[in-house]
Image (cartoon, rainbow, N blue to C red; front, side, top):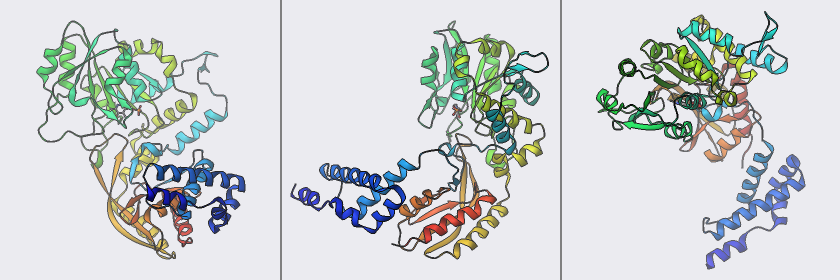
Length: 465
Ligand SMILES: *Cc1c(COP(=O)(O)O)cnc(C)c1O
């Protein structure tokens, strides 16, 4: 108690805070009024922490640091380009996949002009906004029909909602996935009005488990690709081909949530055994849904492909109107798919594929070149080390890709502070704090962004406390 009182007494007065050198810089950047307000808020914040016994010391410096972050947060609102040094290719917090130039241009044109989204140029009549993209997917995967919604969560919701109300859907306990804490298959099921019938155990589900669960009330079998985790060791699951056979013997559809969304197999060490939409359809799946912004490398989207009988039912579902895609996404998706008609074109134009195909030596060279420039910077020391990049975004679980990272440390600032300063740059640099340094993985850094990255580090080197 005594100690707390003492701390409260030590809280710096407003005029003391305002007289610090740091305050003058902040006032220059943000205005006197804004800084005064932020200092008050930061002081209140620290006072509350003292009262709840969460703090051991409170210096003027710390209060100013908190105020500075508050000011930055308030004034840096808005979406901007960042440099991804996290080593995760599909980073959900950084917008997952980066569009190809062609897709980005198509999105720009659709956004900035009128476009024939639902207009048939041949007849001058109302057209179908999905028709062209549907044709693309039919050609690429051999599906009978296709449909598009805002994201894959919406696709799963629509797919299940179109089944008869109160019908049972059989799903393996090993596949009840949760993605990023916000997408849970059981919750989507509940929304759709289906009844979830779980079979098997977390690590083992057998053919007989599915078979014995089928009743008159069963409306579908659902297969979910456990794309963001791996159950390893003593496991067993039933493949798509056998499940399709079982479903069809019982006049049921096999619905598949593929998640990650490879159109067809991608010969890449990071994606070995990663299933593809075409593969699952060929094995007998009736409907397969997946994301547009994971391994496809396109815009956020939910893509549903499969048999005409089921897809046409989904097209007519009332939810479709609520989940429909906008023109900007449609344009970007169409442009992305167009690249897949020549796989070399896809591999050289879709950033995700280009990154996954980069040679280890190229990454090393890029990292060494960057390191050379960083080594010239005052107050910063840098070291190059092998690292492991990740595909991320709920795909290729546990698969590490060999990469290189530059570890940087500042002679007087903590790693946390350095990481924060890097995020504060005009083009924020997103690295990871690792022990006493900031780790900058070079796997996802574009060549043309290297000067910008070096400049950001240089700016941090100029600060010395
Ligand atoms: C990612 C994923 C989803 C959710 O997809 P969004 O496009 O993020 O809505 C659903 N199911 C699986 C299996 C996934 O991997």
